Image 1 (tube, rainbow, N blue to C red):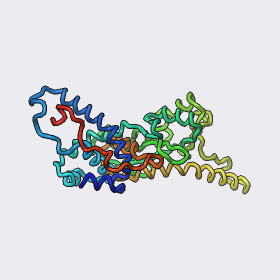
Image 2: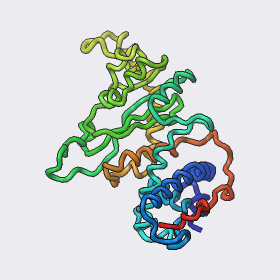
Image 3: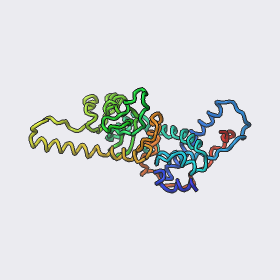
Image 4: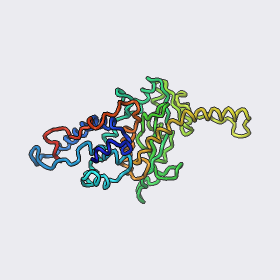
Length: 321
C-alpha cells in the first residue's frame, strides 16, 4: 500500500509513474552490481541463499530516497512508513543517492548530458541559446575552530551556503547543474573554475545569456556570453540614453528570466530549500535532485504500476546483507 500510494500520487515524489519506471529500469542494475561487488569484497561466512532477506527491496529504496529528497522527510519517518529500522533507510538513501547523481540530465530518449562540455556541444549542434545563473543553498555552519569556517558565508545573503551554477535552455529546461562551491565564491569565479571560458572559446559558436554577475566573460569568450548592457553615462545621462538603456535591459531580462524557472523547479525539492543536509554530501544531493527533476512533458504516457517491478534481480547471493 505504501508503494502504491507513493507511485500513484505525483505530489509525493514530484515524478510520474513513467519517470519512476525509467529510474527503476536504469538504476536497479547499477545498484545490484555494486551490491554484489560489496559482497564479493569480503570472505563469505554463509552458504549461498542463507542469511536474512531484504525487507526493503530496491523499488522501496528508490522511493524512500525520492521522498527524502523531495520533502526533506527524516529517516525515522520513512522507517515507520516502510516498516523497517532507521538504519536500513539511512543505508538505502546512501546507496541510491550517488546512483541518481551519476545519471545525467535526460533531454530526449537518445540524448543524455552529464558534463558541461557535453551541454555546450549539444547547444552548438542544435543552435539553441543557453542561460546560466548561480544559486545558493543553505548549509550548516562549520564548528568553532574548524578550518575555513568563514569560507561558506555568502556576501550576498549573509548566510552559510554553497553555490551551484545552473544552465538551462531558452525554455528554462534544466541542462546542467554544477558541483557545489563555497558561498563566498563569486559567480564569475565559479564559472571560470568550471572551465566555461575555455569551453566557449575553443568550442562551437554558442550564445549564453547571463546576468550582471558574469560581466567580463563576454570579452574572454569572443562575445559568446551576453550580459546586460553597461552604462556609459554614470551621471547626468541624456533622456534618449536612459530610454534606450532601459529598453535593452528589459529585453535581456525577459530572455534571462527562464533560468529562474529552472532554478525554482530545482529548489522545489525541499532537500535543497532547507539547511538540513551536510556539506560533504551536498554535491551528491544537488546532482541527485537535478537529474530526475528535468520536466518530463514530452515523455510517453504513464504506463501504470505494471511496469514497475518490485522484485530484485534473482541472483544466488542477492539475499545477503
